[in-house]
Length: 149
Length: 298
Image (cartoon, rainbow over all chains, first blue to last red; front, side, top):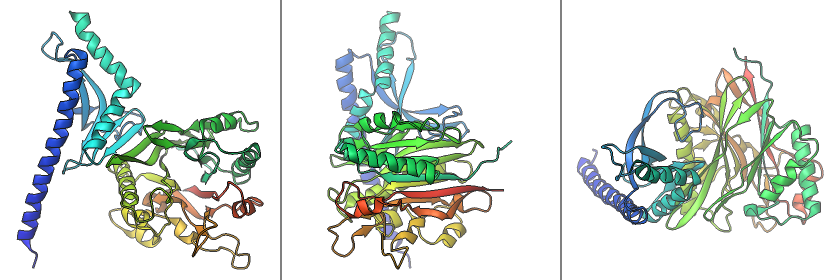
């Protein structure tokens, strides 16, 4: 007979691990935002958001290779100091995450990084920030509050 | 309307020229590589050639060669932190177009490993092939059965699933490269699910299994000559000097009744006269090229 109690207990353990991993991932983004806020005087904030994309004809554009409108998660940057109610959003990478937290995957430009732990995630985010297109997007975002001030 | 397309040949060769994109070859070695490339492109009629252990300087050299006017050369050399991709792709633009390679890697415990480079190939009939070109770490730095080798197989499988999950019909996926693992090693056979049982790959309902035709190439093809029994020659090998580390694997879409199909009769290891002796004797060369051909069923 199937041992449902053992399975149930495994599920509880898995939920605890997932919760711990997700807290750890959130803490990495909190630290990233803390450092970015200091460096940009509060002009840049990074968030994971659900996005929707129209069909795109590049079959390897991120991981979306079909022609349906699909929802996906992305790492987005906003400018919290933008003087209007809703800040423009810059999508800087696509994001996906296992149900247990790790691995998570960050895709930008011509790179796809699978992160199996906290250090890997920190390093991948650092590589993302070094990307010239990401840098350009963040610079535009910072310039928006200056331009509209 | 679909245009009639002649069969296509895809090949992989680890040139041994510049491991980790660092040049080490003599002018004489470079000349041998150039002759091999001409031979692969013209004599073996390869339409898409992926080369391994190539540096930026090697790409510049290849771009300067006479006789390759009908070909395009796309560099796959890149560095991201300590992860270095050392590949290059030569292809016929009159037969196919390719997208910019996307580097896929994973990191764990402070160590990052390259998994594959993903390339979209559009044929002149409009069909898309998806290529995953890999050059996995040497067994010297990541030993056989190391957990990281398993993770390479798992994450390469994720890259395959990513393509399958986002395609409306069964996609044409070709995996090629130097895996530093044999077809029977667990990272390829179990984690990647690259099977030897062609009938079962065709029959499976979920179409998840990949087919690895290089299970056929584990031993001597010529029992009289006993010349080569794999793609990689390691002269210090204790129980075998030959390993089948270079392989081309395909998704089950290539085994269907319609559309593009793997032509297994012209898939395998390429033995170019004279080169095999260099591999077995003292030289920088230690890998034979591999080829897979595909034809469109009417």
